[in-house]
Length: 295
Image (cartoon, rainbow, N blue to C red; front, side, top):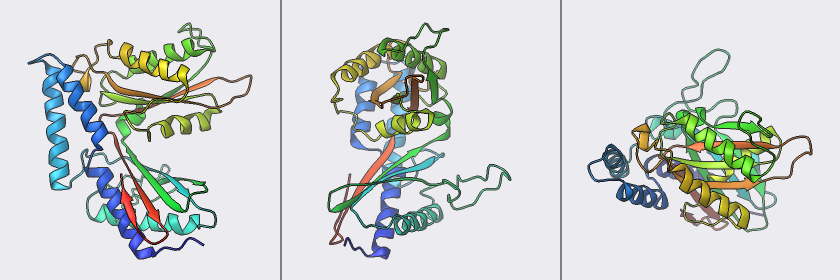
């Protein structure tokens, strides 16, 4: 039976939240630095990247949120057999409320009927926690903070799309993704990172798209067809000229990550989860002895 100290884990989850909100992962920082170097000297795009990188450094040094919108807290939790989901949910909620008190998170959970803010980032479906059981003898907590601006330009298409001339194939997938990014312009706090879900139903397709955003910037898709399409989209989308924050330039996206699911013959959905440059995600591994590592 996997055992852990609940108070210790609550504090460790609080540290996970702090890192996610204030410390952008190194693979993301390196992608932004490379993008800045690729922009023309004295261009607006290069200047915007300079401000973004300064913001990243200050947030890390001062342990303050990278963005004023600390977003929806999205957890993907893998755990051994027999671990209570209810207890882990309680600990995540406790850590979340304390993170609000410490100003790592902004109170973002608003009742959709009354408009009342819960004040502690806890409410129906907030934070969002997805549990999966696995055979490993440790618990993995993955946390992503997704702001409202980039979520608002996320979207879903149903193929075929006659208006775009997009059929039920990877070429059709390509066309709707280009359309989505072009429509977003700078509203999603470009440059964006795209999580793409191909197939599934409407709900699982969006979940698949968001799950892709937990991947590292530098990884390679194990599916050769998707790896090729990710690369093509990355290159082609960066010719759109939207640029960082919509100021124009050579960098409209920092990365494209795609996944597929089986689907019904009658349905072909393509979901696009757009992540802003403040690509906030960190993970924590908890071993049975209480040892914790962060990534």
